[in-house]
Image 1 (cartoon, helix red, strand yellow):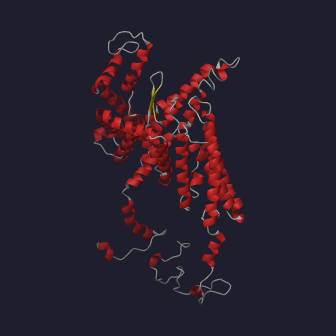
Image 2: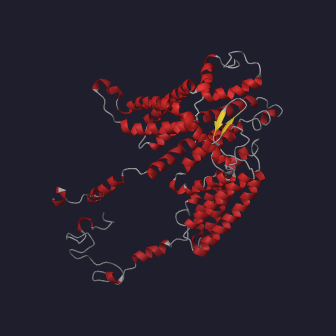
Image 3: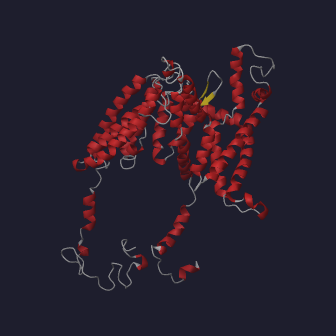
Length: 517
């Protein structure tokens, strides 16, 4: 408080006084709100999700109907491609099997502020400890299922884990295999990876500069973070291993409830997905639907969770919560881009076309639609509302028609071509037909609303030249001595307010013009 009465120092170059004045405001904003934390989480989820296209392409190419025995390898003289297909498919599957670890690393790097390699190492160490400890806890304390899993270590199939007798009945072996697999594989899956990634990020921010006693100095700083994260993984593994049978059943019931809601659930998911897009929180919802909700066990006893993972694993019921994105992302938003281009004034149509045409082609080919969506989300909320409703309708309609089509990255042409021939893909014609309808709907609705209500979409905002002119035309108050009729300035008098004189202006030390600062 005493500094308020002291003589203020001379302003520093570059607006030092202003910077000091703004410090309290910055400090007031420093505590992260819940929304800011969720936005950071949403952004951090994009890093592991970005790995999925490579995994999906490899896994799809390795399937029998493409490079395998029913595809390229089945052609005369191409039998050598069969083992190649197996290797390619195994490469893609390895990424999906390691998704929890990838999410742990990606979330840790994305969520921590100024993360480095030690953050990733801490996430790996923490998740590996958590994974084994949580699995051991479930196997040891969770009743019959855990008992089956513990016996499997000593008596693997084809020995019956209960009677310890050799199993000769293949059907019985497959029936018990799923139960055992569920016990020996950590069922927390991607959620466990996300949790440990957050823990690693928070511990890194707290301890990466810690000072230890001299005799422990080698383990100080960033080297301490993996150690404390391993301890956290141990404690969380024990706690979650004890609680997961209850918590996991709640999560599973929630996922099955959403899927069981059918068209209504799919429609609500589509609406929420687009509503959260401006906040960057749609990735949080996507991660639950894509990698957690629903469960599928294949003939070999491998368990897959989440809509994307189940679809790529061949689940005959998966894909109904993904197919509705194709008409919107592949067809609808390119139609919206075309409408915004043609609704622009002729003088600026070429400029807007150079932006909208590439954005539309990108959306159609890859399903990356942010360049189109962010062109109208904030400047024309009415268009955003239409977009949200149409997305929900597309999801609900195709779910009701049992159309199934998934993706590894997004709902674009590349993923459509890769998955069009999968055994669990159905209703492809319906998807394409609705896509053509959506192209017309988006184009027509957007064009009419933009032109009828003069919405400020790209190219229709205030003309930059007019905007500049509005700031350069002198007002009556500026028609004073020192300003010539032709607009040029006479030399300023001593003490004038242009900020370059030695006199003191009314505005104080910060009254200098922006150009001189």
